[in-house]
Length: 116
Image (cartoon, rainbow, N blue to C red; front, side, top):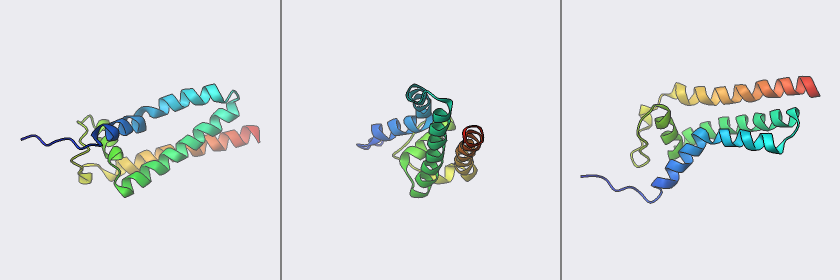
């Protein structure tokens, strides 16, 4: 017998795809909004730090879309109605947050060195 999908199934899947691939749209929007290289770098830096915090907070609070995004990264079917955090390796969560923060820190460092 198949389980019924919850009412927020589509919302969670959409949020998972936005979390996983939305940075591409944000980068394009940032290029359009900030005409200077320094403004672009600072905006991407801010997005990187925000993504890092979002990943860590989402993992600690058990947000479903973070779990589904990690399932997508593992090339598995997204199952927001069947959350098993033990299947997600902690090094993947903390590693991705660390990479986001490192990208933000490097961009901030070089932007400040060049323009300030």
